[in-house]
View 1 (spheres, rainbow, N blue to C red):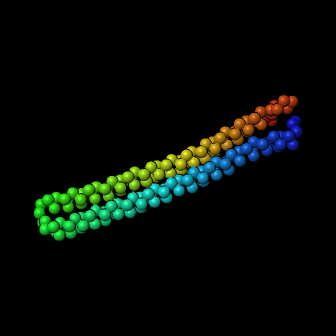
View 2 (cartoon, helix red, strand yellow; view 1 turned 180 degrees about the horizontal axis):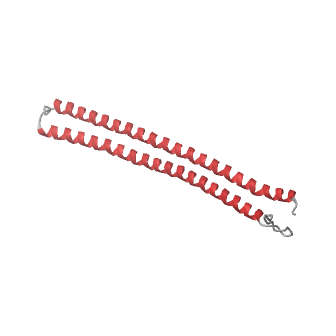
View 3 (tube, rainbow, N blue to C red; view 1 turned 60 degrees about the vertical axis):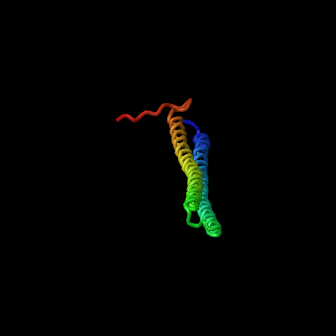
Length: 160
């Protein structure tokens, strides 16, 4: 029979490897979750910023229309069709600018959301791979020690 102390010693290395791989995988998964949370936070910040920028653009448009009305009224043409056309154009451009700011902000936010989802998925896959590697290591370790060692008699079932 083989030396039980040597068998125990040779079992420690693979066991330590399996445990350390699982811990590293768990740590990588937690890091990926933290990175994903940060990216989702950036996405929400980007959405809020674009809403603020759109609100500012709408305010600037309203101020421009107000100033134009005041200048047109001072010049005596406050109600003519040209004034109304210019006011409508200022309003339309202001609304378009605000919507463009919202759309660009949403596009950037979605890219952060996508990157966050990808980071979370990558962490999950790394963890699952480490678990499968640990199972593979454990089964190969068990198969190695299930085989008779050189100089060791093959074990057979006792006769009935």
